[in-house]
Image (cartoon, rainbow, N blue to C red):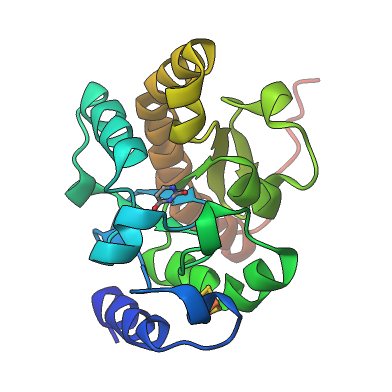
Length: 214
Ligand code: URA
Ligand code: SF4
């Protein structure tokens, strides 16, 4: 199956999922959307009112800010993949509960496996926790780390930027790092097969002779 087909299959499962209590209050589940071959994936928290109405991620105010952040680095929504740790709206936009995130994580894991993005940007505390554990977002936002052959970078949630001007500035600054991080990830990806070939060659060739000059 192509990654597009896998994502489609996940979206169909999510639309009728009843693995956690969030299915009870949802209008529409929001699986996520974007390119099946995206190099960058953005992972938010969970759908809000507008997302729940439209079955699309980040289409409310926070989404408009995210669109402008993407535009600031010459990316369109269709270049990337955008999703959330829980696919259904928590009542009154409360925080997702640990058991809800656990119930939903299989969908996110399968989306990541299908897209295999070089870069993952976490938006907010909840998706950060999945990749960075219990660190503080104020301490580690904007700091890229290599993880499982990709680069992960935690950022504040765009909604936090709408509430606080200094957070908004921090998000803008952190976004500016994405193109460089993408270039570094591209370099890592290009190096990987080359390394494997070198390794294989070494195995085939007789061991190099010690130079007798020293
Ligand atoms: N906030 C999120 O975390 N995700 C959305 O899709 C919209 C708002
Ligand atoms: Fe299923 Fe996730 Fe929705 Fe819970 S939040 S019902 S696990 S899709």
